Length: 155
Image (tube, rainbow, N blue to C red; front, side):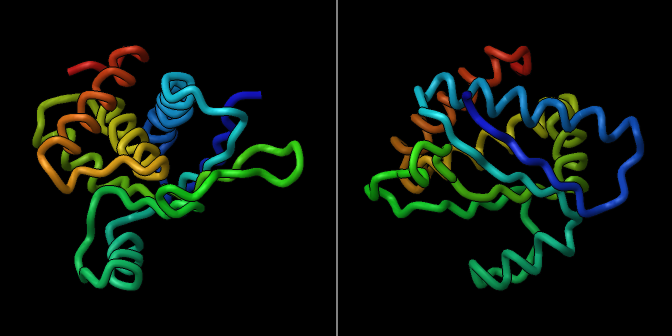
């Protein structure tokens, strides 16, 4: 069964902008494969800067927009379980589309790569990855680059 990815778009996007959303599913499918996950599900919501700012303020007490937020279903170290034989719910990822576009321009790479990067970054947070220490950051960012490279979104 693999990974079920439910993408919700809460802002107006052009048809051209919507085409980059395919990289969310492709990147997350690869991430689930690399991580060796059993059947699981994840929700991804695309919002604007104001939408993500509100979530950042309400849940992290930081009153400014950010690029991606993750809301894991499970606490670190807690066993992940599905209902019966159903897929394991991993949690929710929220991505600011305008912030992704700005960052792609600033970093000089494609919007495809930035959307893929943010999706994988949020996904790894759902699995317990973090980047609070240098070692955690090295481990997480190396895993992100491995996954993105496997789907053709390398730097």
